[in-house]
Amino acid sequence: MDFNKIIARAKALLLSPKTEWPAIASETETTQGLYVGYVIPLAAAPAIAGFIKSSVIGTAIPFVGGTYRSSIGGGLSAAVITFLMSLVGVFILGLIIDALAPTFGATKDRMQALKTAAYAYTASWVAGILVIVPGIGWLVALLGGLYSLYLLFLGLPFTMKAPEDKTVGYTIVTVIAAIVLSLILGAITAGVVGTAGLGGLARSGSFGSSAVTSDDSGSITGGALGGLTQLANQAEKASKQMEEAQKSGDVDAQAKAAGNLMATVLGGGQQVESLPADRMKSFLPATLAGLKQESSSAERNGAMGMQVSEASAHYSDGGNRSLQLEITDLGGTKGLMGLAAWANIESEKQTQSGYEKTYKQGENMIHEEWDSSDKRGEYSAVVAGRFMVKVAGHAGSIDELKSALGGVNLAGLAALRNEGVKAAN
Image (cartoon, rainbow, N blue to C red; front, side, top):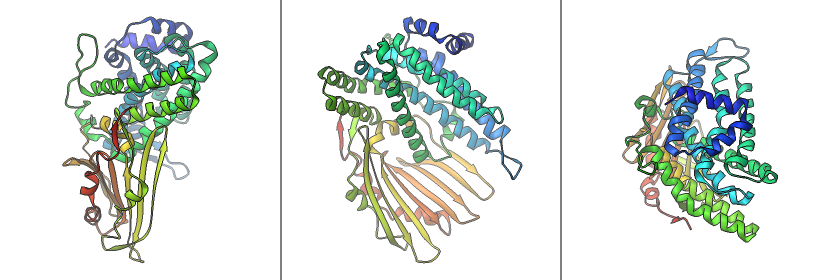
């Protein structure tokens, strides 16, 4: 890893992007080489800075005075989540840039698209390092994000050969897709691993148990990046459909193809129809831990080819005891759930009044929190890599919440892991 080369490239992109993008477009690169030689070190920098800010320097508490610092374990977990999501986000954004190319008269080229995504993020990553500067760190980070959009705009004509008159539209649609992707990644991170995050990954310092290797063609064949390469291959068919729809001139077909592409990428090469609302609602028991169900709701929503179903119920004894049960079918993001499996997820954080931890129990991922000061907590499980079941509320102990979750038909949910799953068209 040549840090002088990395610094020189980042400096050139920030100070003279109009001359640097043509050089980038002409370079022959591999996914592994781009990640190891540029993305990983730059994406790690703001994650490390964030850890220093949250756990070492701390944040001043307005009006009250003093400084709040997160625990070392919590700070490391947040840093690892930020880092991992950056790697995933760059790769998937590259797929989106490549898939959108025909729509805007550009040239499809997966490697050039990945280079575009990676180098456009440069300003955001560099500015993210300055989050440690008191008072203005957040502003610098915001400006860095805006400058990354400008870098994307400048790069598309060179890397993707986008016509000048269509570059603005290409950029806008890509940015919208990036925002949607960011929201999904954030929701998956928060919903699956909680704030404890990927503590095991932080301790082990690896992306998984498999080594990253490459074959003679330079393609990655193992480890976390190998998983991304497989994801790219799965998305290729969907992107070809989008190209054909563009040639047909059929606007409805283009919209359908775009949704199919997003569903394929997020679903890991499969399209997943989440369970209907009434099916989800059937998993809400009439009573939970001796408490009567007072209200319930269920819904199924879809956006950009991805479906998510949710069902929730409130339970109470009419007095001080109450629990909230939530069941979510995350099937539409099966691909991202699979990417989360890279990490050896195991984390534990202690506070003065309680604890928070994430661990594996059989095939299920478990997250639990407990605050003994107000006798409140939550206990959740990701079942069969698809369904998230969470019980939260006031209780005598965390064991009561565990027992309450045991009152949900988890085996029935697990049996539906392949319900609505089909290969991408």
